[in-house]
Image (cartoon, rainbow, N blue to C red; front, top):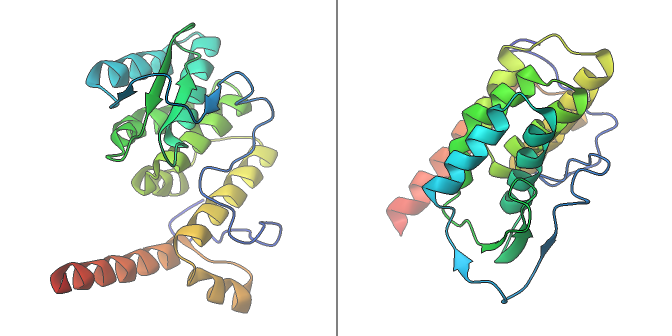
Length: 203
């Protein structure tokens, strides 16, 4: 892939929600449910440091556990309790309104690039989507790593769905050409940011 890579979109369901990447069994052991039983906490620096250490660990099981934890915590739309896989027996109730988990973006990109398996790479991609780190997702497109044909196909499909959800105006281009490029994404992003700035000045 390169900056003008065309995303394959024909089999992407319309507006797949960011973070809905389905990896069989990935969340089956990361309990996530609404509750008021545990005290509400922020994503503290020590938890970020712990997750970063685990994501970088050479042990594939520890890496996977941490990636699943990031996916679960970032998926919280409101306060919910996450039973952490990387800290067995520990549950926390979180509402990461400040998106502190986005600090893990560089580590998640590194995890996608290093694997060691396609399962780990898909988990890292899902985590990047859940925290909404577009800068790192762009880098995945600009500087791809050698992966299997099937993983490359899945990656492009999920990235396409992510950007279609973020910038619905891209669907008009898809309707005309069947594809869109990273440059199209950047145009849509710049337009979106201009709208936000105008709204902020009005407010």
